[in-house]
Length: 158
Image (tube, rainbow, N blue to C red; front, side):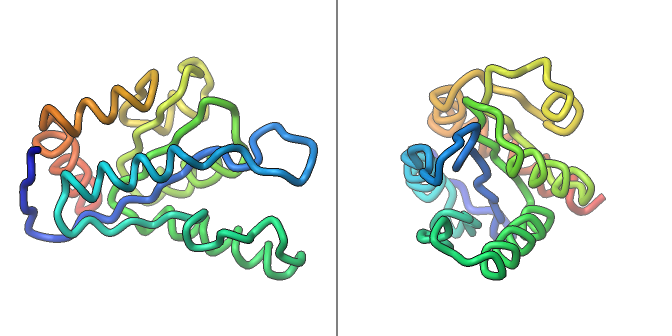
């Protein structure tokens, strides 16, 4: 386990598919969020996670006013993070909006997706990885802590 202390807590926004391309009122599996959160906490002391799903576990049951407030609040929070990790095995309009908001505010973006040719990904993400295992590998081998975290913190300060 590679544990490194940084001068300030890293704020990570976990973005990704929730409803994706569903036409019903159900949600895609959110297991990726748990895996990412656990791995980030294990490898980065004091990491501050911003996770819309964890903060709003019953969001699909919200009325329109609650849902609108939550959507706008979470999209804005994406712009306040040092790093946004976007898990996109399927296209997600909400995640694309979070990525755009983060991009507009100098947030470092890692997209985990097979959609490498989509402009919303190509032109906002700093790194594009093919799968979650690749990102977990970066955490295990220390690349994430040694290269990505300093780059994310430096980008936010520029």
